[in-house]
Amino acid sequence: MIRGIHHVAISTPNLARIVAFYRDIIGAEVVYEGGWQQGSEVIDSIVGLKDSHAKQAMLKVGNAYLEFFEYVNPPGKPIDPEYGVNNHGYTHFCLDVQDIDQEYERLSQNGMTFNCPPPNFAGSPIRATYGRDPDGNVVEIQQIMDPAHDFALEQTKTTC
Image 1 (cartoon, rainbow, N blue to C red):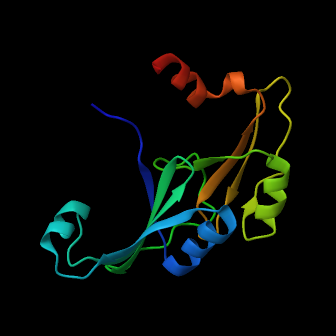
Image 2: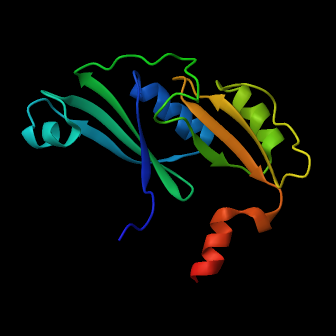
Image 3: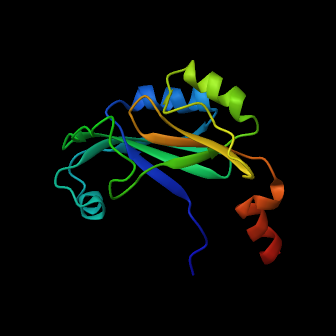
């Protein structure tokens, strides 16, 4: 039985920088820092890489976790920092916020770049916009304006 999503994992070229951003700017709590040295056949088998060596950090953000890896070996290839969210695979994760305008300003001043300020969608119960963290990963910020349209809240109501 699947219980839910525990974490999203992201590879980074600079673990210290991205952890500092998510800890100091986003407000995540670092719950684990570690990694593994080259030579672990078990880890190589799990991650599907030969002679892997990585630094790792797990951060708690509200009700979920973000896991970051900086691969020392084999070194990762950079992504196109302007990759389109229409490309296959991971497109973004979303941070739920209480005041989207305030968070947009604060995050803009602290290293995130956004496609546009959060618009007002006519008749919509949410406001949202996409931005990029210092590594170029797409991060959505959203504010649910009407709690009746909070899918997580709706799910809780039906399962309790």
